[in-house]
Length: 203
Image 1: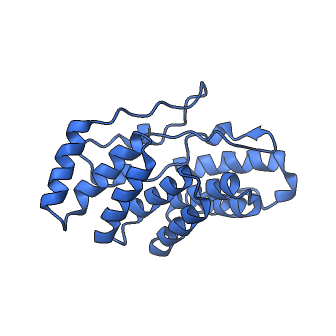
Image 2: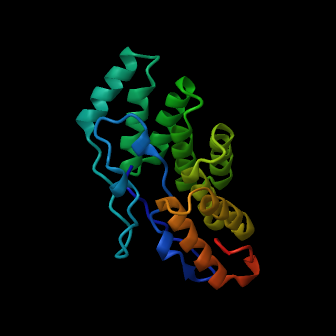
């Protein structure tokens, strides 16, 4: 999945340093041509909202054909969901993630990607419920925790909840891309809202 930007701010302070980090984990899901992790995790360009990928109709048709012939195969369904996500057709992506998860209900990556789709369709509560399911599969899944923080901050205005989630990311993987993004988010949040408090990473 390509990086996505966040156009929201809290108290007038844009989270520019974590733009692009409302990401799922599609690069880990089966794909015909997966984007390299560095590209998938790259911060969004500061010039504005990234353009949606152009939907490859031929690939969609081929994958739908495979999915129809192989009703027990999650892979074509996951790939279809990824294609629709990249094209910002989130309702279609949701339908295919749900289909894939019926076959692989404990796939944390697909579950988190579905949660991100719910967020992008203005369903913050549903997003958090799905991300909670992801954490029930893997409580230390840093991409999920990072997204929990972003949905809580931007979708629910729950700054304390966002702080807690991002602190977990920093504690689990401080030097990972997710950990670095969480550190920047926490620093920005504390600058804008000192009352959120919390122990600074490493402090």
